[in-house]
Image 1 (cartoon, rainbow, N blue to C red):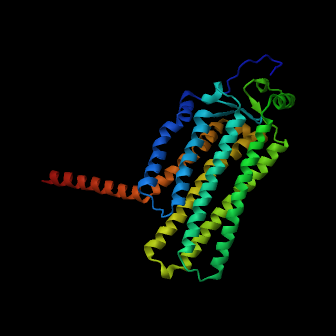
Image 2 (spheres, rainbow, N blue to C red):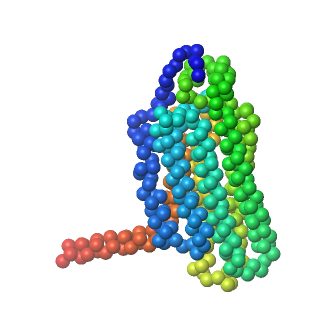
Length: 341
């Protein structure tokens, strides 16, 4: 694409050497967390359903692929207030068009959300089938949870289709037109950098993608919480036919799922909101624009945080930790006893 300033190459990477290393090598030092999760799922899974186990395996794999895409491969470089970015990962010299990697990351994330919802929904259905539900209110909650879960699955499919729409704007004609418009508005020379891609948020492809993606995410959060509430209602309605240990187990699973949903909200929603606020509000860009690195880093590690929580909250991990602390206490007690002699 011809540029009025004859800019042949641009480097938007303003991060330190250490910051670049911890992002680009994130899959390497994050891999043990995912390997531990796979090990626990394969040899110490507490799930009796092969469908739940398969969904958990898929969720771990998708989280790792999203980490690879957002850090090593993509590593997006933002320059606010322009709504645009440049590839800063290893694919910068292979295929520097960020729209493709952005679409891959969004599709992977929708896949993670769908598998997470499937796990919660499947556990709910299995639990309801194994118990006799006496309260009509619990049955109503169960029906609503099933109906909305199936609707949400349809929304996930529609969301993937809407994400693919943005590939239509990944061409030189659109970029030439938008760069002229953005340059007239901001008068910033870097807009003409050949590897810098801008995006007009008013094009119908982007608007449709945002509407469908936001609607799907909101519905996912609502249905996820509804499934959790329904599970708790079923446990309490069947407490007379369920042992205390079983009740505690199911309540702990629900608690873990709700915490994992909170982790996803923190590691995904907040960074994205921060980036968009920096684009549309000058004063936010002025005071928090330097924190864009941490927004990108946080978003890339949402899968690692999600998986790490699973590993640390697993019953096998807790038992191993208790054994370790007992062994350490025993060694310290023996040493104190020898010294006293």
